[in-house]
Length: 461
Image: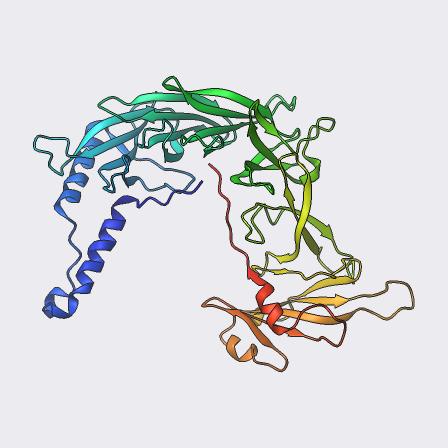
């Protein structure tokens, strides 16, 4: 899950700078070069942080992953629209046991309800850095709790969750894990639950997803389910809809020589891995060796799709790189898959094409042409190959898509036969389409509509 919380004092400085610039035309010339002035409350906060660091003998700590990586984060934990809390992440250099600190400062802690930040909580943890931090409503009371992953080593973490109501921080959860976790509300009760992914380091294949819910004042495991055997790493996890509308957690698992996706749902009996085959111990229906693209809602219908690549036959096997058509599979609650669309992706050039019906991989070949890459031009060429028997005509080029990045890209995009698909400050994408080769189901406007840039969507903790 992604958290877009304004972090650190940099945002405050940016706002101050904007405010100054908005009135710069009315200022004397000698004042136009003055640095932005932070509000007094933030100066006081920094002074309080400095005093705390000096008292502890601490330095700022590193937060390795996730959306919240600033060492100072301004937070609205109670949902009133005011960022009344500052979370500061420190490491005490003089101690070995629990050297990590999360210090929480809150406004209005003194008499009269002033805006001064005062320390209200200090959380301690093991390790030398913080793997990630998140803020979620785990208890359903409308306020958010803090979830901290303390990093003990490269593959070992402690996941803790704390309720910050009142003057004492109440620890709701403290468990070791060696992969990652995700926060979601799969049961729709308005409280966020935590799903923790564990790899069986013994090699026995007992990889697990553990489901924690808030029960009687603590986060408790209420269900677990097996992940695929042979798991080397959890690459990504995301909450998304199935084809029949149910929520699920899509877990991308790295294997030797490829990847697969375990799809987890919550029913009345607990967690269920709907794609894992009992006999093989793996989600074979989602396995693939081509791993440059991951699950996404490729057709924007609100359902996550799993990529199933199909290798194309190369024109020149000795020199052509491997090329694929990708069949995107939607799954229902029973684990049954169906194809929603087919695409061609080139991660190298950051674009993909949503293919029309009739593009049979048995009759299409694709190759790259990077001969002009030193001049800022790369291209992907599509060929129609109706027959592949000895003595039959060679394949014919019917579509070329160019990525232009040179200083002359505007001029090169207008060469004979070329038309623009998309342009931005980084590159221009254009194409040449020869509809005399075969009826590919596309004209210039159709190609523009089916052309898309690749964006990165997933993240893990």
